[in-house]
Image (cartoon, rainbow over all chains, first blue to last red; front, top):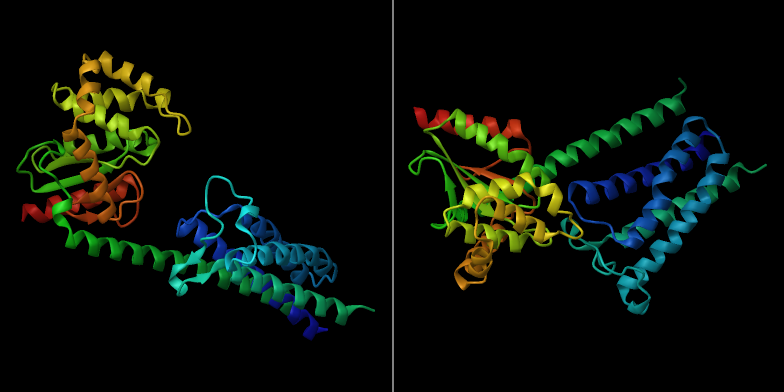
Length: 138
Length: 218
């Protein structure tokens, strides 16, 4: 059982690192999140709390509650990544005035795009939760 | 506490610590980058026509980039005034403009124009005092600001006409150019003899000024 729990805490760690990074970029570096980033934040931030409590009390149900959020995050981050890659028409962009969703470069990491990082994080969390749930199902 | 609970707690602590260290590291980096820019562009600190208060030959110069519509600038005005009172012979203040808010550029031009009528500081103080009534960030009500300025005895009609002149346009343009070069992104931004605040706050400003005054007393 301890080995399955490792999957859960790894998922939590990834969500926590992603949340801390998002807060760092937004609050410390002062980059205003665009609308799509906000949707991803909405899916990512609660994962820290839900999975944290699940790890702490070793509660399998936490992974069940976390999975829909992680999946939602994959969808939004996937859309955002496609948008940046230029594979989705820009007229779909839901941001009106304010911050551009297509220019989200993180300069300190050699211009790595934040939505790619977000997509990776959501994808790994989803996979980990999925495997965890499979392994612990009776 | 079992080992799982302990793991969660320890990891949480690590993340929080890394976050705080990251803030520290990042802020130092930004400050160093700004200091580098500042040392390369010291001529951008004070322009001959910048508004100045206090003795001209004072050894310590506070340069403040400010926005007339910025609340924090308004709050800092008496703080800076108190510092000047504390060191009447050693400190002078140079005001530069950072018109980041909507409508601020118009107010800045009015202020510059008020110089021609010798009413600069009265107008500035009146406009700052009345800031809450005109400087709503979404939709600034400049007419209210002009009315307030008129109450100081300023000939607003003349001032607004003067504000259109290329000389005053040039002052604003120069300030914006300088603040961009000096990487000023927030108001108020202070430089005391070219040194930026280690972190933002009135105490930090006071101690930096005290430091520079002491340096020049030796």
